[in-house]
Image (cartoon, rainbow, N blue to C red; front, side, top):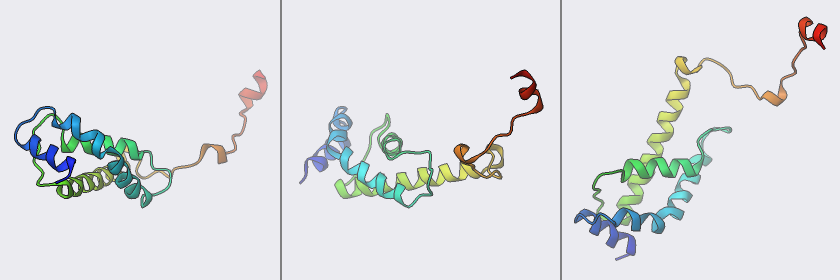
Length: 122
């Protein structure tokens, strides 16, 4: 049984310190899962893999007891939580209220014209 599985079992039995012990053991692998999920997202996504890991962690563990049968179950739940976070993010960005009908433009690629007022003042 891996260290992560043992800590998950301890958490299931009510060990309040289990989440603190689990995060350092699984963080690197969660980061890899997040990077893999983000690789299939559109370019220019505002959510970063680290933020995705943190959001998924809060959803999985949060301030409540968590129950996972083993390490594989935990990582499966983490991957699903990350997928849902990405879907929710995409839906939120597509809403009309948030400018979903607008096209994103790179500010460096836009040439600004000076107005007549600006020329008169300068």
